Image (cartoon, rainbow over the protein chains, first blue to last red):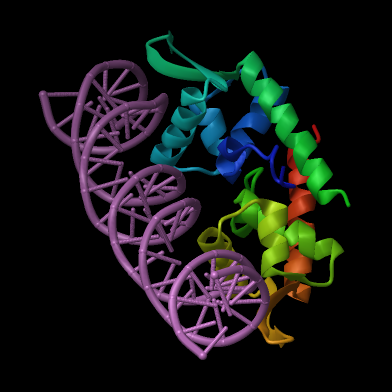
Length: 96
Length: 96
DNA sequence: AAAAGTACTTTGATATTCAAAGTAAAATGA
DNA sequence: TCATTTTACTTTGAATATCAAAGTACTTTT
């Protein structure tokens, strides 16, 4: 068992790390909000949310607000658990 | 300025994160030691150390121990500084 | 009604990651 | 001693990931 064993590769990327961080403290965030918070381009954000969705770490819900499409993201129970594990592993790794 | 602005993409990968973590607490580590600590394959470790060397975050020294080649790695001043910055940014991001 | 904007998705070129295979010398065994 | 295995890496190139430009399907503004 290596020292990076509990570092989750799904969170290796800063944009995915950012998405999860946002979704740990906010029940929901929509595409626009994430895009602004992370300074990501559209295509870029779409692919990272897709990656997290594929792992079932986030839930994607499409709805209309007024007449406009709106996609909102939330962390799943699994996502929150895995992210916490990842953070713990990170802390163990870097904290001495 | 986004919330992931000070997250350094050079440290986005868990193996590079692991290498730096080891080199923050050990003055030196050699190839074998890193390989074992990180559970990385040879080629994999070689490419990640190369990436960190290219950024001048680590120093690579080739020598012979007895009659065997030995490559040892150490964090540069720049590498340590950037890693600390990265950790601070991480903590800010995830710690609320 | 045309033009511009919003909210994404698709595309495909570029970059990164990975382990298998390669290299060269040392250690082991017959 | 000479072949075989092991050690310590490096090289290679296929697989995967990343990225932003372009595309889609509207809505809003002029």
